[in-house]
Structures are given as structure tokens and as C-alpha cells.
Image 1 (cartoon, rainbow, N blue to C red):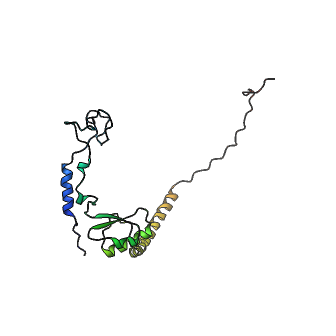
Image 2: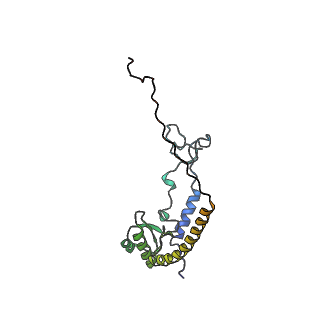
Image 3: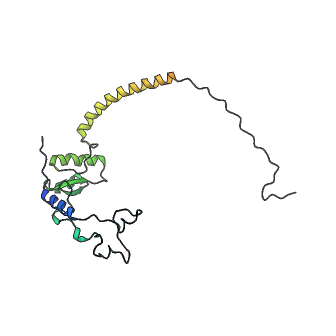
Length: 195
């Protein structure tokens, strides 16, 4: 069994968490006065707006001073730096100790499976690995198991359908009515001349 990796930058994540605790929750200006305003931040644009002007006694607005610590910037919550990968060759430049890969969203199933197998060989962490994509070897074994399961299920469903059909009484078909003939009206249409 492979041991669980220790996060390479735990200290940086702790520093980021400490800085986040100091940062206030930025609320929309006067959202506490009006129910129609949500609490989510919106930039104040008014000439007299107190938050935009940074008046003392009013809530603070976001600014660059609240930026996270430099050592923790762009880190994934797992502690690794994210690198987007589009093919197997991109894995050669990855440092398994400090970087984790995210497979690009435009990558197809076949290439995704190749990237996953190569990443497992190199012991690289995959951030967007899903259980639906499995290596080719396990897919063949699963196919054999599912074939036997489906044949049993098909037999039971067919038997159930046949028993339902037998129990239902047959409906008599209704005879179709002859189409109605159009009646000619004596009324003159708009635009017709009277004679």
C-alpha cells in the first residue's frame, strides 16, 4: 500500500488561513438598510458613496492590501501548485513533490486515460480525476461482469413485460368517421363587389 503524501506547503496554507481570518466580510453598501439589496459585494459607484470614499465609521471595501500572502498565492487547497495538462508529454515537466496536474477540459476520453495511467506511474497527484475514467485493463474485466448481470436482468424484465401484456384486456378499435364536407356560405367576403 502506498502511503498518503504529506502536503508540501502546509505552513503556507496555515499562513493563508490566518490572513483570511483577519479579512472582513465585504458587504454591499447599504445592504443592511434595504431588503432588495443582497449582501454580496458590488462596487459602489456613487459620487457621495461613503464606502467608495473610505469614510471612517463605514464598512471597508476590498483593496490590494487584503491580498493573500505571497508564499500561499495560487496554491490549491491540497497544498500543490496546479498545472494544466493537455497531453502525456506535458507530464515530463511536472515536479511530483510540489505540483499537481489538472487535465484540460478539452482533452478526450482516450487521451485522458493515457494521461491518468502515466501520472500514476510517475506518482503525480491528479486534481480532477473522476471515478468514471478508468485504465483500459480494468474496463475489460468490468465489461465481462456487466454482460452476465445484464443477461439476468433482461430475462426478468422480458418475463415481467409478457405477464403484464397477458393481464391487460385488448381494446377495441374505433371506426374512423368520414371527414366533414365544407359548407358554402352565402355571405360575401370582405372586398367582394355586390351585384
